Length: 189
Image (cartoon, rainbow, N blue to C red; front, side, top):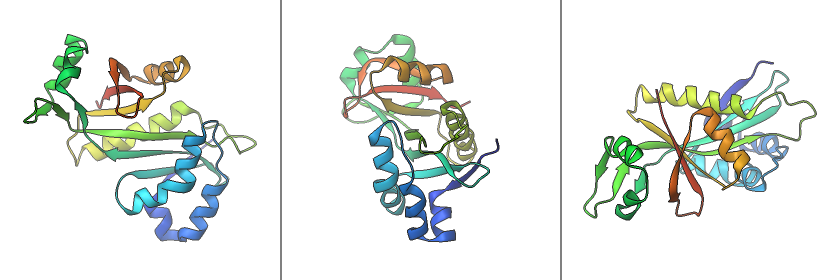
């Protein structure tokens, strides 16, 4: 099945906010946070430039999935550097700047949300395909904005961790985000 991706900004300008909100209302996820973000926060975050959301439609023009990205640095505090592996520390700090307090700021993209619509009778879009579409878009953006890494936060759930690891993300061991989630990172190549 062929899928088409539209930025939320593009869709808002083409069909208007009311029609976009109606399309978003039909989205259902197994994770209520992913569903809530798309239905209640994505448009606001788009308008104030916190994140950019991309909607993936199937050939029947049904919303099959989405992802949100942001140009957000990953910050490794000085004390975090002592608990991550030496190999990862070397790889990350090589592409980071050190601030006055000794923290490392890694210019990167945050993959904030990834969601599949489970409200469709037949939705052949896989999570791996959503990640692939997001990754390819970030590679395009990288041609204009030099960024080396993409990172995400996820629950400490073996199935979720394996899903992202199978795509190429590496978990930063012993590192928990301010939000209380695991942090995973991948180099854009």
